[in-house]
Length: 113
Length: 436
Image (cartoon, rainbow over all chains, first blue to last red; front, side):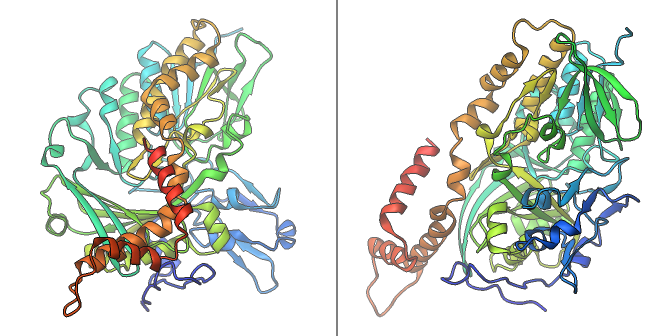
C-alpha cells in the first residue's frame, strides 16, 4: 500500500519512524546478483549484542539484515549483504562484529553501480 | 634473495587503482592489480556522474572509447519541501560535444574498461581475489615483503603497495593509515536503478539520445540529513539518497525509506513512473575530504582514492571519480620510484606534497568546510522551507487581497520556518565563506 509522505520537517517529525514502503526489502533486493559465500564474511557475537541497548544496526542496515528475535537477541543474515559497512561503522560495542570482505569474488555483484 | 614477483601491487581495480596501475606499468614496473569482485566494478557504487578531463593525462582518446551512458547537458538543483519544490535548471548544448563536461557511466562498464586499459599496459589483473593483509620485513630500505591473498597462504612478493580499496578501507584501517575521524564523516548512499526505455527518458527529460540530465536534490529526506540525486543513463534512471550516518543513528529512520519519500514526491514521481527497479545498491561515501586524508604513505604503502577520502561532497560539486583517478596517477608515479629505489629524500613527504599540489589537494583543501556546512541545519532545514514558502507566496495570486511584496514574502517564510535569525545569518555567512 502506498502511503503519502508526511509533511517534511514538522515540529515533531524527528522522532517518528515512517513505514513508507510500497516495496518490501525482499522485492527490493530480488534483482540483485548475489554469489553467496559458504562462510559468513560478517560474524555477529550475539552475547555482546545482548548487552546493547542502542541496536542501531537494526534500523541502519540498508538491506534490513539485522532483526530483533522473539527472545530479544539479535538475528543476522549475511547472504544478501550489500557490503556497505554501515553496521561496522555504527556498531557501538567493541568486538560485536567481525567484519571482512567476502573472499574469492563472493557476495554481491553490482551491474549498475 | 630472489627478487619479488612485482614492483607494485595495487589493491582495488576502481578508478584510482586502475589509473595507478596504468601509470606504474608505463613507468616500467611489473604491476599486479588485484580486485575482490568477479569483474572490476562488481563492488563499486557511485551516484552516477563523472567528470573525466583528468583522463587526458593518461588516455587522451577516452572520449571515443569510454562505455558511456549519456553526456550531461542539463544540470538541475531541486529544493524540496513538503509537496512543493523549487528548481534551478542550467542547460548547455555544448556540454554534449567535445570537450564535454559530465557523463553518466555504469561502474561495471567503466571500471572494467579502465582495468582493461591497464591490462594492455602489461598489468596482471587478478579478479575475485581479496587482499587480506600486507606483510612487512625488518629492512628499512625495502619494508614491504608482499601481500597475502584470500585464496593462497603464500605472500605475493612486491616492493610497494597502493591501497585503492574504496571508502570502507579495511586494510588501511588495519595498517593505521586511516584518519581516526574518517568514520565520523562517512555518509551512506542508497541507490535504486530503474529501467525505463530510452525514448521515454528523452521525452520526459527533454534531451536527445546521448544527452542526459543530472538532478541534485536538497530537502525531502526529513528527519534524516543529506541529499538525493536523480541521473539519467541510456535506458535506466539512477535515483538515490545520501544520508549522514550520524542522523541515521540519531533518528533510527531507514535510509531506503527516506529514498522512498523522495521517489513519492510530486516533483519526482512523474519522472520515474512506469519504471521497474532492476538493482538496489548501497555504499559508504567518505565526506571528510582533506582533513580525513590520513597518512597517505608509510613504509612503502600508498593510499589513493576513496580510501584516502578524496571525495568532494560540496553541495553543487559532487565529484569523486576524477579525484580518485588523479590521486591514482600520482600514487602510481611515486610507488614506482619508491620500488626502484629512485625516490630522493622522504618518499612519504614527496607523495603528500604531490597530492597537495594537484587539483585534488587544492580543491579539497579550499572546500574543506563545505561538506560540514551542507549537512548543517540552516542548509538542510531552513533553506528548503524559506525558499519554497517565499517563492510559493510570490507566485500565488492573492486576489482580491493586495500582493505581499518580495520582502514580506521572504520575511513571512522565515517566520513560518521558526528560524532563529542570528544563528542563521551566521551560518549563511559561514556557507558563503566556505565556498569562497
